[in-house]
Image (cartoon, rainbow, N blue to C red; front, top):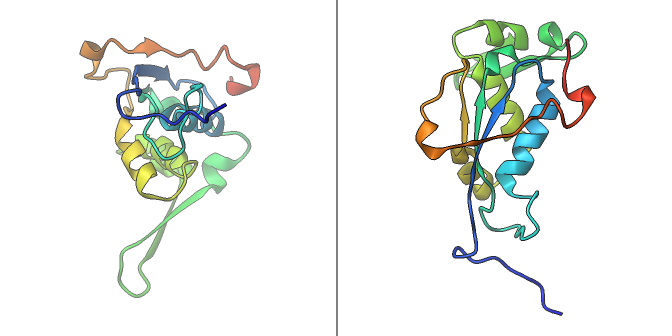
Length: 153
């Protein structure tokens, strides 16, 4: 029996739409990372971009459990001495770009290599309910019905 290895001709990409309203951030990010990587497919090949294109809408309405909205801190550095900046998850979600919380969560669930940087180009995150990808006819993935723990009221 031979091991199957996918070639670029074998790869079939779909468009998936996920509504993030009321869904727990970590659970959403793990599902999106799995779809981006292509691990849900039987023909998964680790070194190929096998995953689907994922559209996440309502990223500003994502839920955080416990006190993470005030305690979870995102750090960045300006590049200058003493230039460490920090913001809480709540500040980012209420700020100008709330979709960055979802993007960072998904990015940190992927391996840190060239392939993951390529996979991140297949992710589109929007703060509101509108998205410009209607022409691709994305199929809706209902994350809420997968597990009752995926949502918070």
